[in-house]
Length: 268
Ligand SMILES: C[S@@+](CC[C@H](N)C(=O)[O-])C[C@H]1O[C@@H](n2cnc3c(N)ncnc32)[C@H](O)[C@@H]1O
Image 1 (cartoon, rainbow, N blue to C red):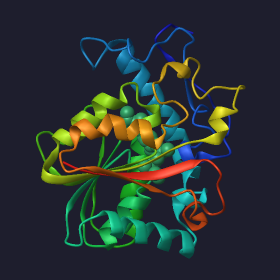
Image 2: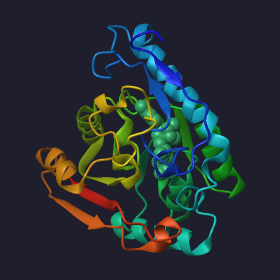
Image 3: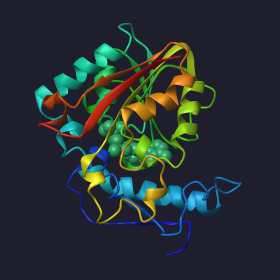
Image 4: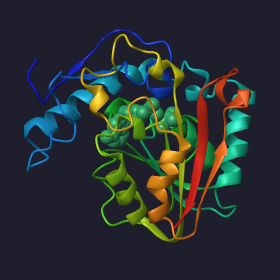
């Protein structure tokens, strides 16, 4: 494999908290010598950075059709859907807000937000995820704008939002801290960052097949603990940061979980 590239693994994954995959490290694969921090090329449209991005998008494209099979992805069961709707309501303003759902996947959370009257823009690297999200909202008769694009280079230009929400994306970004800064820059004054994250047990004991070869160079591969994420976000959030544990609410996940799950809410 070419250094700096990512090899897409085709194996079917079991636990897609982190994607189409049981384990955040079992997705697209970077070459053993690939360093996600150094793969950037001067021109993001060409070179290793573009190659990597295209391959990651291909991985998630391949995952899109089955992604909603997981309870917390598709929110197919009423108690799971209701549990997420309740939490979202508690994290978002009561009045309709402009919400950016970064790494929106198939749009399950976007749909709940739209049902609550928020104006949702979803961005995802994988065009098939974007198609699914569009289809999901259209089928439900809800409005939403969905764009294919990179969370690190948002395709929304100078537009600002009242809320930037992101679930289970940070672990796979080559430079999550710079993504956080970029998202905060897209918030209006008084805006809110809502991050739903975790550290996944499967990742810790994986020892076997990595998400990507060389994924251990992804700063938060396997997830990020609440303490570490709060430390990264605090300097960006003038209005304070709070963390809400989510691991004890089985309905959110379609069953009991033992690893760390939480939401971090930051006001800027
Ligand atoms: C684990 S899934 C989570 C999807 C959704 N947020 C959810 O919770 O159901 C991760 C998503 O992030 C997307 N993704 C991965 N890297 C991305 C990037 N650099 N920019 C935007 N989206 C990305 C993937 O295509 C995938 O849809």
